[in-house]
Length: 200
Image 1 (cartoon, rainbow, N blue to C red):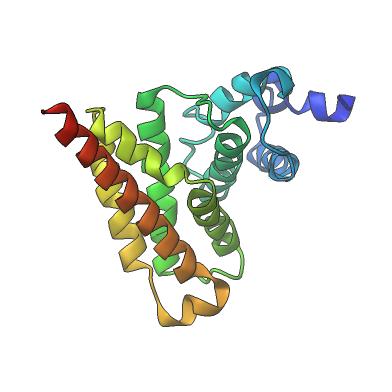
Image 2: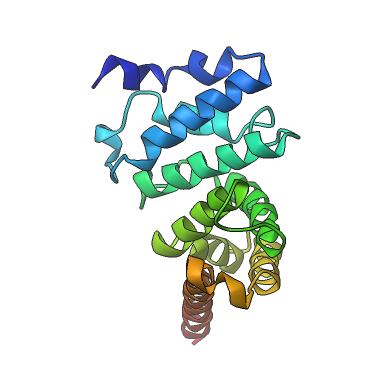
């Protein structure tokens, strides 16, 4: 692997950065790299891929108070979900926490312009949830009784419903909304059917 690529997955790339501006710059670099990376088996992924994922969801990065920094971290995390699918890099509890932050980002679609600025990044998250089918994960976790997952599913529905606007059609926003709705509902129905069958 290209040394410049491997360097981005070294713990120091995100770990030894004190200035917010520099950390944002490095997250942008990482997102550009991950965005173009195909789905990979565990053996094919860069060394320290899982460690980088852990860094991204740390309170220092994904829990940061800075909105731009947090949004970039979310973009990187949806990329990692896609690249590592169907494997999960995070625990059930971590997935719930991650989706709680995703929901917060999706809520901003109600007030931001999806074709400019941070709206583009939020749209990126929404499109990834829709196309990669990652949006069904909270439903699966909720059906397994994982604490907080049901609230995440409801929060996602509310965020999507409140952000649907007629003037979003040209940007494909509403199409993504429908795709996420459909995927979540199908997963929810499948989970209910599975529970019903197990009862007999």
